Length: 542
Image 1 (cartoon, one colour):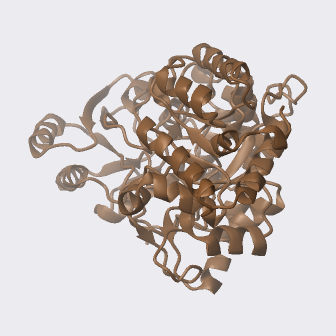
Image 2 (cartoon, one colour):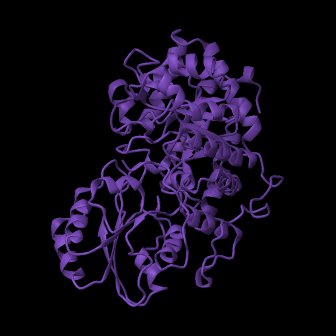
Image 3 (cartoon, one colour):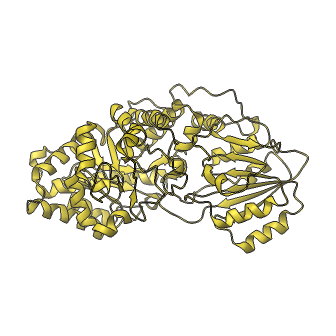
């Protein structure tokens, strides 16, 4: 690795950028960014992934390209949070549970084990940084962007699970990234779409939002990602934390003593790009104290950010010493993480497995692989029966009608899975008389009418609800209300536990926090009485 003083200003500025691209191979966009602009980091999304083997080859290709260009090793990252936010969901990558499912277990040891598994696998395919864990405290039921990405609404529990995740990732040579500083949990607006404010006073922020970040810093987290959220009790000017010197330098660096990498959330998000523009925002983020600028999508914006920072240094708006110190932190990290092989690290498959609860899965689907067994145990410990008016377990002598929502619309925090298993499919392996009607997450009134006609003679009706936003879609609300007039319903919240707040109280209400195949298989055993789940709500349904 080149000494810092041997780098040109252009090479130093390039190190401050982490960029995405739109192909499953080294296309013109990323090639130009690496060869001509010396970018220091790359971020993968689903659009870059065909298979685990393909992604492994791509990582090697990009690192070779950087080496051939005389650049520093790349910092290759991904948002592999687990649960419902997993950019790599192909065979060969364990689909570990998400944060709220882990929070529902009440056992940070499960979080540690999942991070070890995931960290080991990410390292093996050439990824050095996971933009996880989310340590936002989700205490706003209407939060449209965090939700089940949080461990829950209790700061101490979020901190405990966050420390476990950080420890697990970094034990496998993967940089962990605590996000979104100073906290995105108590918001009702998605910062991908607009500006957000957290209005609380400093005392409340210390007790709630900041506590998990302080604990993450004590645990030695490598990186912290900023939030495009305004905190008037810290920064009186109407600017988001990402662009605030008082937040990033005054609070995070000086007061909280964080010495690692400060990375921005993507500057193309509308909370930043609309009022400021990406180029100006990149300059302001560096002025505020950010080390690494994330621009995930558009080449034009990526080049504008690079050229904007370079011009700010050339004209004296930003001193070269500020750039020098940021690159110094990045290079320190790269010496520790980039290109490090994980052969000497402890393989989670060979390590002691987390102890199970006193729950044994039925033989017909009992996992045999260590990672599968871990997932089965966690699902058994996370699924939560909020209330049950005698409808569970299902009566084996009666037929079952399942209404299953399918995710078809892609968003930043909600993506269709490459492989899925519906509840009807899982139940049919255990009970013979199962009918299933699949709907979209935005069912129409006509679709509701067809379901009402079809379900009329069914004795046991299960309605699965699903939302990644702050509100359950009106079509799903309408469907549940119509069905509840003539049926005692079993309602299963497949993602957001707060769905209960927007429907009449059903006969039974179950929360799974995610609809991953492992959870659906365990859920089928819960419903038929083969398993007794032990999950507890990590949020209040008030």
